[in-house]
Image 1: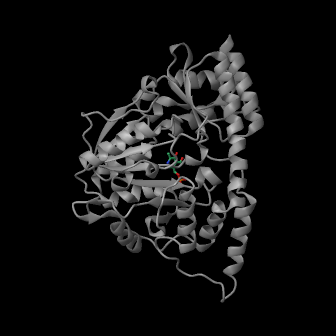
Image 2: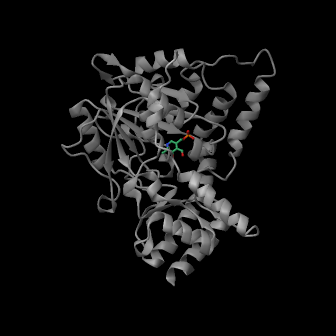
Image 3: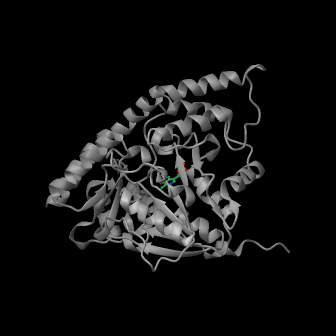
Length: 395
Ligand code: PLP
């Protein structure tokens, strides 16, 4: 008789988005005409930029003629896209060769699949509050997880101390849900610790394009020593509106080795076994993101989200409420007022002003008492929501 993967039984039910949907549906049933201000979900609201759309159309036409048709694509990514991504890193003085860049269908896929490189005996370290997929992917793989809590005392950016004992470190910067961004010295502390202990950092850079403070690192490879201890996982989902189009990339330096095994070569072997590459059409569309025209257009869109963030931050500043994020990230992480729990604050906002955010408790217990706003929503709604939050909390 076949044995299922019993580690699935260890997964905790995630009630976060289910509970939010239940509460919102109940409210809408009672108030069918109420307009809801949705600032909870982290999906984008603006369409793909013109440069990407043009390239997608061109690629569709290519597929219509024998002379330009593409069948299977190279498993690790089309050379034209791998080269464009490696060039993009040059903006940050990071030298990569194109065969250190692996094109993927998105960061979520890679965050799970990359664990194939590591033994089940390893322990994974997750800094909380955290993006829930890190924990669940490791539970499914039967790996032990250690949780490191962060708080407003360290700006939700902890550094390792000697008590940290793990093999795989997840670092997400800019962070979802807190919007906090590791500076160079804090990131260096993690890089040094990983090199010293032989751990590998999985660096989730899905929100790097939102960094505007020039002193902050976009890539872990801006930090000396990272090439011997880090893998970077990135995505065009939030950078360029690819949440429904699907494209990401993963950087594995050639120096990254453990116990004599080379992780870049292992990943080549993995991809050539487990995928047949990302669609030519999508890779062609994605290549436009890395052109000067594409960069300008995606940053025009990011500016719209930044204006949403500025509007919410202004309201919170005027109210004197503690928060982090917003400036270099599309999330704002605020302290709930008057000692309210995350869910009490959720109920208050929904019932009184129809604003929907995400209770911080859903990202780990140390998120209790905090609340996340996404700035990917509609600008008109965000302006009204910020005004309503100010009026409600002033009372
Ligand atoms: N990593 C973080 C921190 C995210 O917040 C998300 C999506 O919200 C992802 C990865 C997944 O990105 P993708 O759409 O590329 O799968």
